[in-house]
Image (cartoon, rainbow, N blue to C red; front, side, top):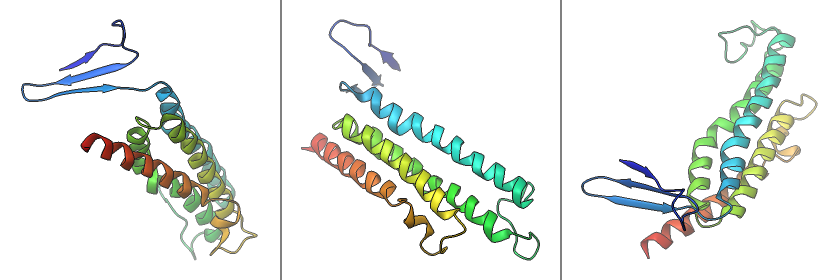
Length: 170
C-alpha cells in the first residue's frame, strides 16, 4: 500500500510504503527536485538530442533500419556512421546505474548529485561530439572533447550514494 502524505502539515514530501511486515518512510530533503531534473529529466532530453545526430547520420551515410550499425563493405561510409552511432550508444552503458546512484545519493547530497547530473549529461554530449568527429583518431576521439567528465560525475554521485547508504546502516 502506498500512501502519499505530502499535503499533511509538517511534511514537505513524504511517501510511505507499508505491508504487513514492513514500513518504509522516505523524507525527501529540500532541493531533491533538482536531482529529478538533473539526473532523471535532463539525461532523457540529452538522449533525444544526441539521437537526432544518429537520424541525420542515417540519411547522410544511407544506413537504413533495421541496421543498428553500418556494415563495412556493404555501406560505403560504415566507419563514419558507426562512430556517430557508437557515440550515442555510450550513454546507455551507464545511464541506469547513474540514475540509481544519483537518486540514492541525492537523498543525502541533493545539490551535489543534481550538479553531477548536469556534468554527466554534458560529458555524454562531448563524448558523442568527439567520437563522431572523423578528423580525430578513433582511439582517442571520445576523450579529446571532454567526454571523460561524465565518468567523473558518475563517481561523485556514486560516492554520495555509498555515503548515504552507510548512514542508513550506522
